[in-house]
Image 1 (tube, rainbow, N blue to C red):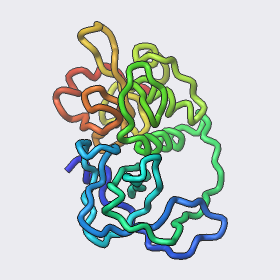
Image 2 (image 1 turned 90 degrees about the vertical axis):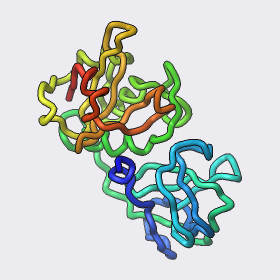
Image 3 (image 1 turned 180 degrees about the horizontal axis):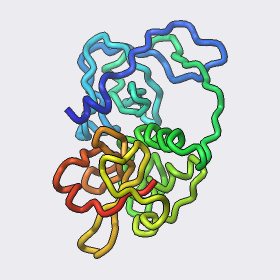
Length: 231
């Protein structure tokens, strides 16, 4: 249920003509058989969605000929085995939006942008001390990078980040894009962080999830160690 609520169906765009002055999203593909959409280029990774035979997908080539990257409905990416998809000779585009400057003063709009952007990196591997949003990132590097995209330069560690910004004392006051901070008993300090998505869900780069993934804040294991939230 959690995956369905965040990554419902794969974006099915059957556009055969490019939109003028638009951004190219990828090629139009069509599954030739049932095709799982994975979180990474490994058949053992999490399955985001199972595409039915003859379903349209928006695909992009990867450095591995045996895999395509797939654009999902919420703007995130998954991966599909290339042999299960026929690449069609059509580009899929979307109208380029008017450029917007996401400055800290834009408040809720900027934080909403952070929440949307965070889902683009689902499946990125976890790497201690990493700050590469595609090849390996840890929890605080993930949050720091996302806030950097709206012009806010956060400190590097979760403990330091938790001291910056407007504190939020009630869970019901959380808004998409707010930062969450969790206690780590082994270190005796705040040692983990993530981005609130809304509806009780958050996204984070977690060693336990092998990378960037979503979780439900309502679960006791997270509520028990949540010690701070900042805006």
